[in-house]
Length: 355
Image 1 (cartoon, rainbow, N blue to C red):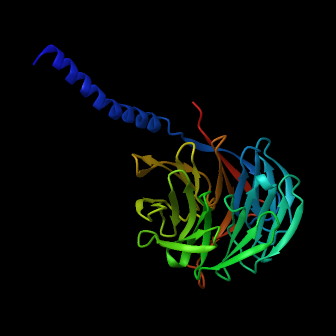
Image 2 (tube, helix red, strand yellow):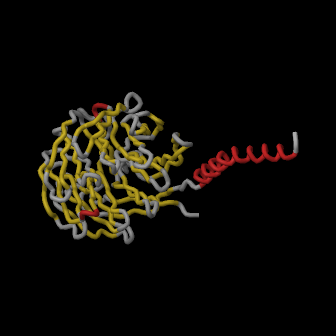
Image 3 (cartoon, rainbow, N blue to C red):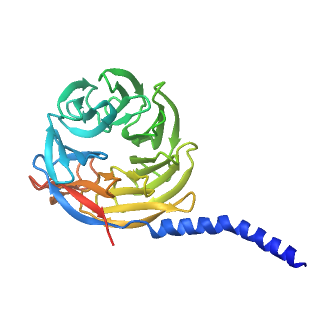
């Protein structure tokens, strides 16, 4: 073999190996850079010891926390409550439309959605959707608010600008959380059917249903990776399923210690979060191009089952209260029921650990 030929072959081999080496280095950096989290502090909030979802207005330090008959607004920079939206009887979920300066909160007991001015927190309208609204989502692609109703098993669609109901979609199953992809599709957990309904937010039709059984029973919490089209589904049988949204293909099933009511996703670090009632927060990260793994379990507090995540500060906020005792299962309830100490509602703050 001539010296020139040897040089050419060596150069060709280097070119072939370069992408593999680059990928290895990138993956290695991503793995090494995976942040670690720890319980930082708590924010006490006066009022009823009853809660559901939280929402954060990204970039403003304003946290919206449902609390019984109201929505508490907290400045996360100062840990002070700066406002209240009330009454919201049976407050469950909050959706924000920042470009329209609108906010929306579901009232499960009153059977309404409260529309408020996002800047002043002034109530603008009360929209009747029948008893049973729970989760809620704003779809920027259609500028519509999506409200699943547990009692009527109907998805109410509200024009965000006017507060008028513009459509209703029956789905014939118990709904749970709902998320949007930002391109005109919404994904709604159907708890009793072990399915995820895919809704076109422009035509207001269910285009298909994704079956998540048998690995996932009772899909409850739901988060979405809008860039890669991945759904993270927390299930009542104590697992998280990772599903490819376009195809419905199951990519991973990961165990969690207990019931999780609300999942969240951080696109900046490609991490999903599953808060469980046992007092743990499971952090899920990528493993290779399509795989996922558990990267950390953070100690929080018992009953912390819902959360929101601030991408800018890498901080999680979880609603919780102090448990005085547990009541044994009774009637149709097959699990113990916590009794909370009056006045003990607070927000746990879980922050990234800095070197």
